[in-house]
Image (tube, rainbow, N blue to C red; front, top):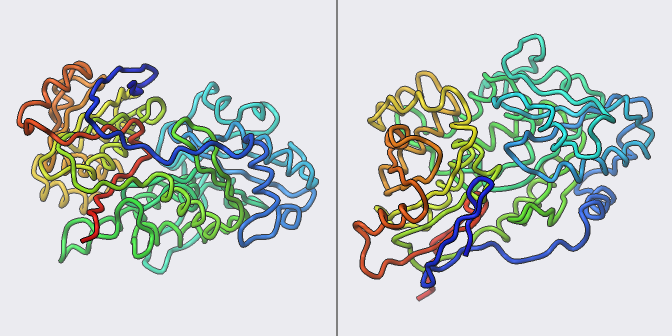
Length: 423
């Protein structure tokens, strides 16, 4: 079989391994048809022609290049739909929800907007520019909420994106398009800090994990902050591993998102009767392994298939490096308790991802195939392999003679779960 690595394909021959894949379903219709059908029957919301009025300024929020959503398909259809509701192209602005990520290039804007590029204004969110931010107030837990001025001042606001698993917010999509998508850096950090228990308890909150929303303090903080922005409409996709649009969910910020989460969980959660000794995991290729922060998702999901101390081979090209200039600096903390204490003093989302990376590298053996140097790889607690064959050779050390092995070709979307047989 072949596994994606950046823009390449790597061959793998492990005939006795179990391959973990999502449910194999094909789209029921072409992308534009799926979008139109969802717009016609929104969940817990009026249709857009009952929400917008001719002459209103409409802002559409969509994800950046690190999170493929199918935007080049749905944005042109959405704007055409708004045109039919009396909204002119000149009254529409697309805001790229960068969160704390880098600005996008013109080429990336073209990829995101597809045929829509050039018709409507497109701007990147800047989480660090006070002139482009508006203070909305505080959540009930005292989190300060500041967001993009263009978004806050929009007469009508539509948030778009895709639903997938998230390693401590439960699921992506929905409210995350707004927070952290178009929030200030301080708001991003404060909402994500809920990943930790109170200091008197210490450690990570047990509900701040992949695939869990109920009782998840990060999800609850993000949702409350996003509601303060008062979005008028949501459009979220659920994608296939090949990045096809399988389904589209439109309507209320929370209810339409929950419907997308339920569908994502049904498609992408895969049961194992017992944990594996070895997992070979591809992030799913570019852009899912564009940088390590994105690739970490596949690491987080992949280790769920392993026994404690098991081995994971991660294929993650990371052509854009770590994904943020402060991420690698956090690995100066070698002791996990000291690391957590440093995060509590000066929380950063990148630091949280670095802490989670090191914690998993201490619990499991992780062999990384990437463009990072051996020194960079070792600092993150992992072993460097020059390629997939070299990684497989390294992995044999310490494994049982008949190692239980799984292969996850799209590790950025598939969530293994250990589900022992009844009785």
